[in-house]
Image 1 (tube, rainbow, N blue to C red):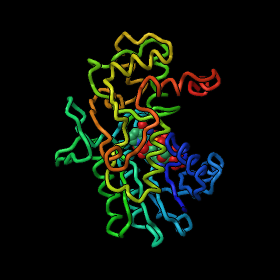
Image 2 (image 1 turned 180 degrees about the vertical axis):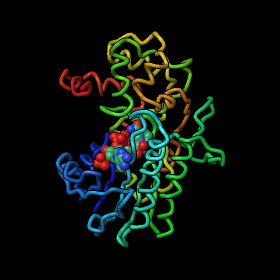
Image 3 (image 1 turned 30 degrees about the horizontal axis):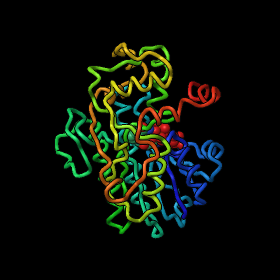
Image 4 (image 1 turned 45 degrees about the vertical axis):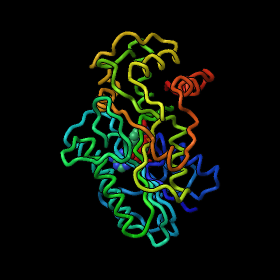
Length: 311
Ligand SMILES: NC(=O)c1ccc[n+]([C@@H]2O[C@H](COP(=O)([O-])OP(=O)(O)OC[C@H]3O[C@@H](n4cnc5c(N)ncnc54)[C@H](OP(=O)(O)O)[C@@H]3O)[C@@H](O)[C@H]2O)c1
């Protein structure tokens, strides 16, 4: 398959490119800095500034699958008005342009989304049948509009999958940002610690994207979270244990904000989500459903890997 990936230089994208290459897929990427992305990933890359340019036509030639991962990182700095605009536009406007430019050859459009589409409070359990209301929070608006833009591709007879991703555990993302806090022994519960944290191991999210791209049964919104969600308190204990650090003392709000920026709000929200469609419709086999095992896989390795994570 000829697969075009945006945001391929990011935390999920880098691992996804590697997996798809192992599966002998033909990868091309779009990046704000094509030369850097090509050097990093070892695949052809094109420059694309979504705000000022149309999608480069050469990148779309004979393209059969688009995987759209790009978007301004939520955890990098304050959510000023300008950054909120960039968080939104780098996902919604880019998706709109990709859909508009879709070539005749396109068979599937796999697009990022997030568990932020759900309300983020309480203990109620949510699956993909949740009807997104009209009054939405900032996070819900982004995810909702992202999915609406992606779904427009269906009007061209192209299969669409929106991957409602939970907190990805791996050598990047939220875990990497929390690492210094836990190393200082300050990684205890946040708030009352009862909020649900929907996690997924990096190997599993890569498998979900791979399946969504190649398995024609996948369509529509798909929750990508472990079937075994935990409360934040449990997560903090398990992460502390994996790092052999105490995690009893509640993390002060300002420390959390230093680590995660305004995305700290996501650690305080409660997302009790199940991967209903992955399990019931597609028979997806998770490699990691147990949190301590997932963390042990990431952290109980050689010192070299630990240093790599810490750097
Ligand atoms: N990681 C998670 O836990 C998680 C959870 C839920 C949803 N997601 C979603 O999944 C997608 C991939 O996640 P990730 O963790 O791999 O993200 P990431 O590491 O932040 O990488 C995203 C990529 O998007 C591009 N990008 C960043 N800012 C941009 C901007 N302002 N305009 C245009 N392009 C920009 C960059 O690629 P170039 O520099 O090559 O252009 C970057 O490598 C994201 O859209 C994210 O919202 C992730």
